[in-house]
Amino acid sequence: MGWLWAIIVGFVLGLLAKAVIPGKQHLPLWLATICGMIGAVVGNAIARGFGIEETRGIDWGRHIFQLGAAIVVVLLAEMIYNSMKRRKHERQRV
Image 1 (cartoon, helix red, strand yellow):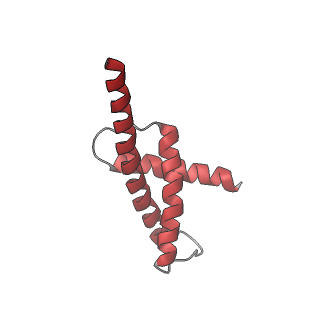
Image 2: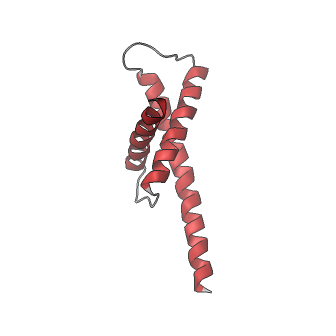
């Protein structure tokens, strides 16, 4: 159940990050989900560093850190993905 929950949270965070970032993103959905999963792990670590532990109920502070980390990870992945796609397209032209 842990992996399924991680995939669901990663999917939601990846979609939210893509929605927050202005402009059109070309990142595939599977990659956005992986970025969301990474963002969740990084956000949890940052929240723990700030002293936010698991609490009963909705832990808004931890979720904000997760979303912020997911946005950063999706932005970085989008830049890398676009540059790789551009290089591949340029090599096919030659």
